[in-house]
Length: 399
Image (tube, rainbow, N blue to C red; front, side):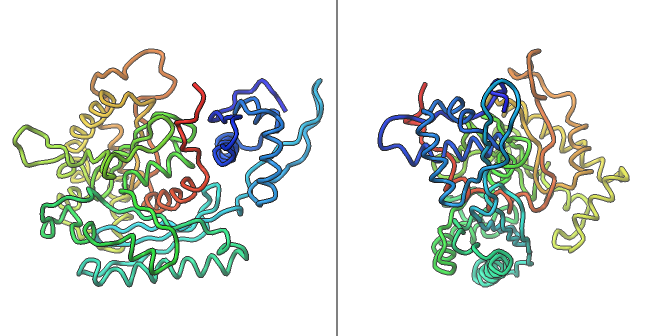
């Protein structure tokens, strides 16, 4: 293999007592770069060759890593690349939204294996929880039927839903919020009902998790995902890790007021909910996604009028994100159909001046990410994988 090629990896440490971190560093390097030789891994992670060899052998024994065909050629000795085993781990992701719930199963490298959805009945968690639990059960059962060792290698259940979380005000009558669900002991209920480790994040953070694992943010240390769904949010990837804030509410940019003392927020003008309201369509219609896709692709005048108005606030959102976080790029993503997202991207140009507008950029200031109603559920599933295998111990990283 070419020992000169650039390899992205987090630094390991050769101090004693840090083997768990080093395992994660090796797995992360293979996730970011694909198959690598032991020499590549040692050079990229700054671990000793012996440490790398020991960890690779351990990961092979655990069914997480496998050797590939030996590479011959060049002046050096033949080298054996090692890659992740997709079937080494599995996770289930669950999205709970205002009218629908989706569940998805992924493997260690983020491949989607199973996906199912169901409508959520009115009544909040009292009537919705049984539907959610049944959906998770159905996906889990199908996964066990399709993959013999899936249950043994299932690392957890990731959940994503709209935030913000932990607010005291009563939002039960606010159609933009999910107050009853946000106040419900969801993690405890799902954990008791499934026996799995359960994690929770907001939908924009979940979309950023998906982009980081398999999308436009893959391999980036500083990126912000501007999420356009039923609401608006920003998923923050800072220093190579997802930043959630003190209460899991970081990036709730859709709640930002458009004027001092005003009541209109960004998501009141630029979210899919505002589009449905503008068009007078039912967001629970089974064909709503394809309906919006077709009308946007045809440059429907009502759609385009909304796009021009929404682009003003989204352009301002990008300016705010760049000014505060200085990301490598901003990624427009979420549940908006591709044709609509493309038109939003075009209408947002030219972007407002900001500190991100410099000539030596290697990435565009704004780029298109996932435009998929399943992106949030996919990111929710990626979170347990990341929780189990990503390096998150910044205190012991080398400078």
